[in-house]
Image (cartoon, rainbow, N blue to C red; front, top):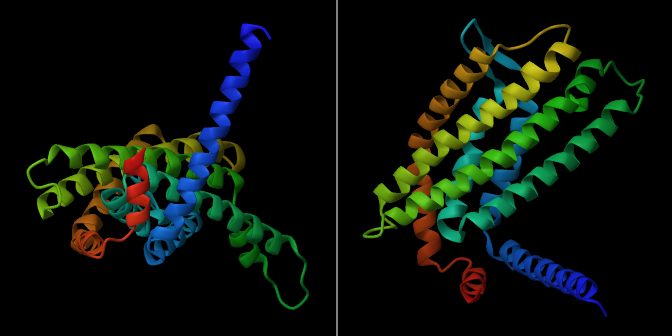
Length: 257
């Protein structure tokens, strides 16, 4: 057996072992993480995708879509999960939420194309059918911003070595990561949807780069306000989880690694 073949088999074996380990670890995480937070997270992602179809405000310098009304909840859930379980766990739940959202969109689309003589469902079909490039843009933007938010949140949290579980530490890591994460979420989505695809498929309708940037900044600021309002709830949740030793099996598992 030559060296190249041996190396290839070793790489395959290593990859298989890694996949098996990640699968087992993810299974433990899904058993350990409280269902309420996961449910709110998934629902917020699905609603965010639907609401993004509607532009709420559009001027020469600012534009906001309906997703701004719920996206803060997604980031608050990620902040809670990151604080207790770590950024890797939070990112895995984000991927799960994105996959469930994609499955929901497929079901909605199938429902929209099934003919019915019971009533005129044109408006409903338009909502359920959605727009493929909005789904594409929202999925890419959400996953990218989730990684940014989770890693930044965790990194900032580690800087508070004297009192990492205090209110100040939770507030700073949540506020900074939410603002930056939301900014990139809004920016990536706006650029993909409203500058790349909208001019082609929406009869020339589009946002300017300035509108995309201002949308990202103002959207992140608005969502930061919501984070400030509800972060005390998130802090209490993390404190309760710690007191009740929530997720001990998963936390022990990642400590062994």
